[in-house]
Length: 61
Image 1 (cartoon, rainbow, N blue to C red):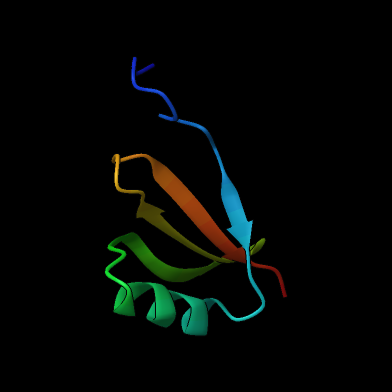
Image 2: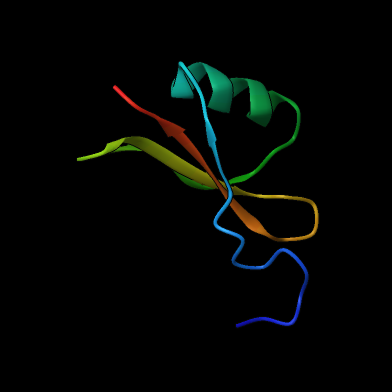
C-alpha cells in the first residue's frame, strides 16, 4: 500500500454515457489510463486525478 493520501481509494464514478463522458473529460485535459472497455459488469475506464490517484468511471447497461 502506498503512503500517499487517496492511493488505492477504489472510488468509481457512474455515468449514463461513458463515451460522451470520456470525450468531455479528455477535452478538459483528463488523461485516461484505461480507455473504455466492455466488461461483464458493464463499461469501464480509469483515469488519474492531478495527484496521480487512479479513479474509475463506469456505465452499467
